[in-house]
Image 1 (cartoon, one colour):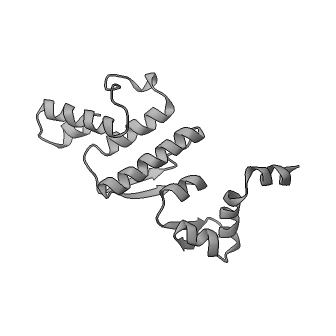
Image 2 (image 1 turned 135 degrees about the vertical axis):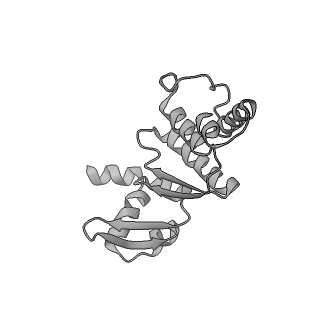
Amino acid sequence: MALPISVYTDLPEDTVNALARLKLRMVKLSGYEEFYPREISGGMKKRAALARAMALNPRILFFDEPSAGLDPISTYELDNLISYVNQSFGTTIVMVTHDLQTVLTVANRVILIDKRRKGIIAEGTPRFLMDHSRNSLVRKFFDSFSCSSEDRARSIL
């Protein structure tokens, strides 16, 4: 945690350590300062990575499938933490994700890309695209979310 702060600043060691503890507290990892990655859960590793990324107070954070491999509860917690960072610190978040719940929780603006067309097929707020897009691929993307699990189960049976 302290490495980026100590490498890229001239702060004294006690200040570096205090900042590292502050960043860990921000992601609800107080008390885990001395733990190795192998000693914490996958969700905790993702939160620690976010704290490390926030170490130098960047204006922009990039995420590539941040909730990959997490259970739904850990995904929900990480999504809320990313939203908190965005709102509290004004950090711009650029994220690649296929998780629809994450899109609806975190995103203010969405750009949908179709690999077959090799380009953007829609952009706007998640809610607007979900409710008003006329593009069939965009509708399919959001319809897969708006179906309840019961509806999906019935369609499979």
